[in-house]
Length: 265
Image (cartoon, rainbow, N blue to C red):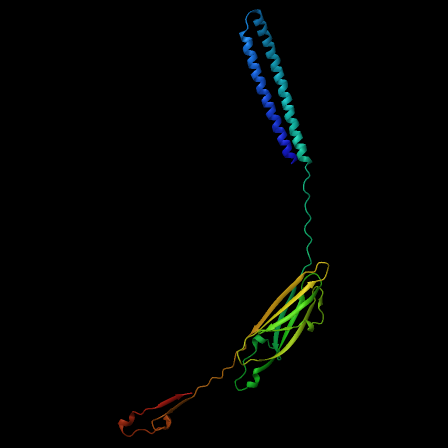
C-alpha cells in the first residue's frame, strides 16, 4: 500500500511540472510577440533586453533542468526507501506432524495337520467321515505406527455371522511394534463345495492429547473341492430278457436281427 501511495504522489508531481512548463511556454511566446511589435529606441532597447533575457532564460532553463533531475533522483531514493521499509513476510514454520496411526490385522487358517486351509486335500469318496475337518483361524493385530495405541474393536464375519473377538486379546494396549494374536477353532464340512469367506476388522485410537482413530481389515477365503461320487452302470438284454452276452447264436439267418435293449443308470 505504501508503494502505491508513493507512485500516485510521483504521478501528481510529474503532471504538475508538465502543466507549469506549458503555462510558462505560452507566456514567453506572448511576450515575444509584443516585443517584436515595438518600434524606435524602446524597441531596440527591448530587443537588447530580450537578448539578455534569452541568455538568462537559458541559464534558468539549465538550472531548472538540474533541479528537475535532482527531484527525480529524490523520488527514486524515496520510492526505494519505501520499498525497503515494507516488512517481508517471515517464512511460516512447517506444520507439526500429528501422531502416526497405523494398525493392521491379518488372518491365517490351517487344519489340524498344519495344512493351510486353501490347500486342504480332497477326501476320498469311500470315507465320508473325512469330510468333517477342524480348522484353526488366527487373527493377529499389530501396531506398526510410531505411537502407543489402544484396540477398541476386533470382529470377524464369516458367511454372514459376526463375532466379537476383542475379549480374547491378552491386552488392548499396543506399543509401537507390538503384536497380539487370537485363535478360533471351527469344524467345517469340506465335501460340500462350500465357500468359506472370513473378514476381520480392527479399530484403535492413539494414546495422547489428540487421539486419532486407526482402522484396518483383512479377508481370507477358500473353497474345498468336493469329492467326485458319480458312477455309471450299463445293462443290455435281448427280446427274451436274456443278457446280451448270454444270448444264443441264431440258427436261421432270418433270426440274425435281434433287438437289444441298453439301460444306463
